[in-house]
Image 1 (cartoon, rainbow, N blue to C red):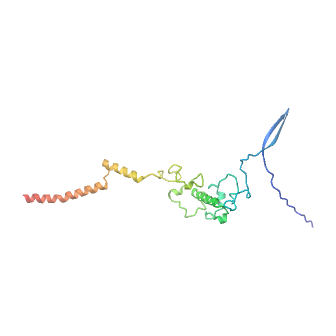
Image 2: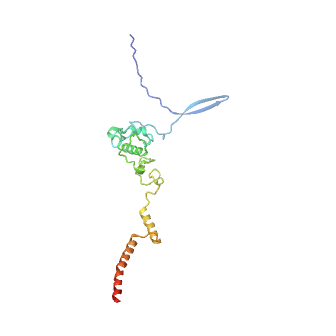
Image 3: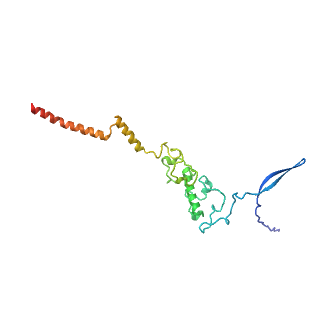
Length: 217
């Protein structure tokens, strides 16, 4: 019976530096070779867990340890699903292990993904989908949902009917009604009441005048 001892060796991957192709011509001979290029200092690199600075004395979370300029967005569906329950709600920070800043950003991105319609199988029934809210909405940043200014044309992605959401319909309707009353197209309720009162007074005054005329004869 033969027993072979298995030995496992651990090694780290070699550092991959940037290379460039260089051609050298010596007479009739052309030599092509790779030359190392020094990496720029402003190039983003992975800092690692130990290089990350703790915030308020707390250990950095998994999203803060990466120094790459990548920001979580509502379109990162596969990443968002890792922090969600089956019903589409977000897990608390005790389970996600994220800091307060990343947890709030995660919750905003998940809410934006629901509003955009990226989770049709995980949308909870309590989510309001009536009227214009059933249309998908899109954002450039996770904080755009708190921006009071409408950056799109009124009616696009926000409203079914294309009308100005800040349009004062009561004020305009009152102005149109006043023009119609002045032109005699429509009678105002005040004028109708005055005419009815005048007709009633004239009707009550007619019998009295008739009696006076008969007595005089």
